[in-house]
Length: 128
Image 1: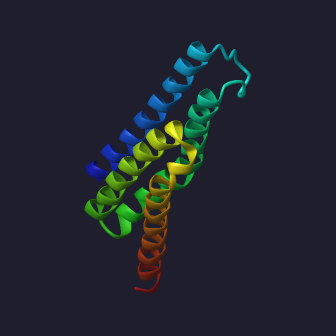
Image 2: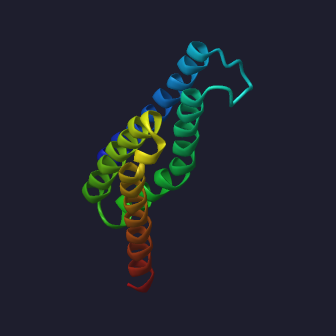
């Protein structure tokens, strides 16, 4: 499960980088903690970070369960698409929130594939 481990850690690193971007935006736009509003670009950056946390709650267990039952290469491949989609989402959301659709769509498709694959794999094991 080395590939699943690597992708999982890269997802956590990506999330950490999004957090660093929030900190930088706080400084740049003069938004003191704990405030989460005050500048539109800061708010977008903050939302990217927070929305990514919401997705990680599904992504991390789903990639591991999918990797265990279906295979690490499939899980890691989907995970790579997830990382690219979250990056695309971040770039487009910060630039123009209306343009985030592609990143959001691919993120959700990956999450659905990982969860459904994990459910299918676990169900097959239960019946076998």
